Length: 145
Image (cartoon, rainbow, N blue to C red; front, side, top):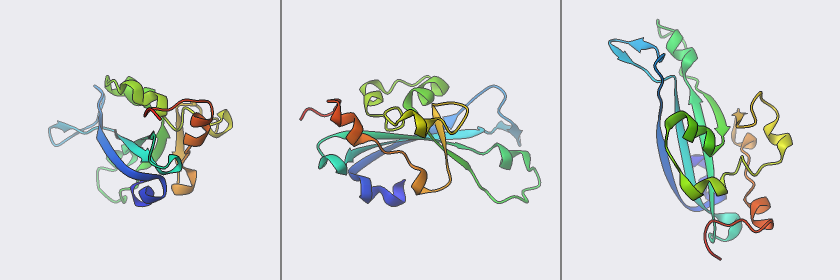
């Protein structure tokens, strides 16, 4: 996403953190999170910078953690997820930003390629769901305009 930010945004702000659980695997006397989340809030270029859009991600690293000999390269499994999913995993509250969640506004067909409609596997930038125009077409904006 960040490599292609100029295609989507005038400005952006990135929040990131671990997804922690009691069963995270230990490594050298510390528990290592099995994954990390990232939320990108951007001034949407498709709206001339006059509205916000939110894209949320989850990166799994469980395969790498199970490889205790370190023979596997770090290849995180990446997913585009909904903001409510990140809120549920972390206990955080992103407030009104949920109204600008790109995956939540995507057609159901784009969300149905995985067992849960709250996440979508990403293999590259071409898989990114960006639906700001659809949301604004029904009158949902985050910034007053």
